[in-house]
Length: 385
Image 1 (cartoon, helix red, strand yellow):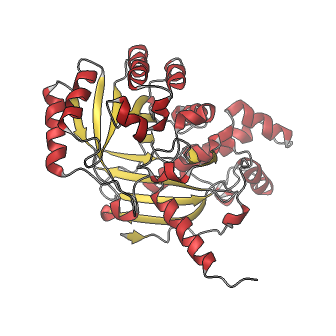
Image 2 (cartoon, rainbow, N blue to C red):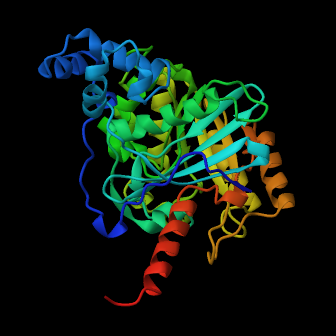
Image 3 (cartoon, rainbow, N blue to C red):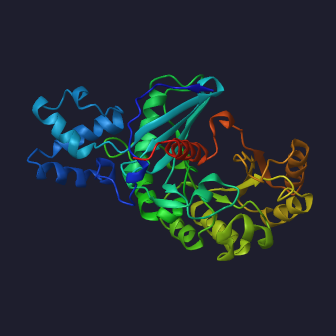
């Protein structure tokens, strides 16, 4: 593991945390909205396009590097359009630099994480949509932390833009110098922050200067199964991949592992997923964390195979990355292989997710939890005033 002194940490006291939204940023607005803001400052509308090109096209935030802007207006425009949203706390790397995780403190003290993963043919960033999570899945570090607040559209987008800049710098070992994929699989339930996540997706896929110019098909949105929001997503005219965090094929166990299942049962959640697949033509990714002696029994593999056989779906088995002190652990490899075999024998496309970042608290929420624990420990050692 390598700790990267890439950018200086800015201290924001956790005690100051408030459930308040950050200052408005250009990524919160479409291009017309940015132009209206700029003209309201007494500047010509085309300045909005110039600043947007720097941010989305050149991945530049420093106003002094925006030499096509008059020197007298650079700072003022940057203050209004590019306020700092993500304050770096810690950045770690492993896998010879191919996996890099950033922990951010937001303006109100909340913590969020982003992970960049480089491969020979692509660079993917996993981003957060909420600070914390309200879904309360017991095996997930973020779920156990609870929900602090939804992120703004720009706080979501800024994670991807920052990591696009990291990729463009060429430091991601053995990978192309361009961000190509974004997965909403970091902290939070994306569909519980629906409007801002959809706005963020539209920024990510719009070409510069409107947005980052990624392919819709290279965006993945995960959900634990918020059925009305899945149906709503199917009507958005977007070609993003839906990733359903199923984790159990039967209601008895899923009620425990994914508490929202007590509201929408497995059959209803899968029906919503098949509706999404039918309306978009996109294969649904079924996410399934392999948890030792909990959901990895052969009969559950067979049941899952029966539920998915003949559907436009792919199973992504995830070796659990257990949190410290947790009673949950990853399934042994022979058990995992048998689970894969049974699914494939049922005709279900199945792969096992590449395990990245274990030594840098790679699972979502782990680095934030460690930072909170460190902060609380430091506070406990302080002498009273």
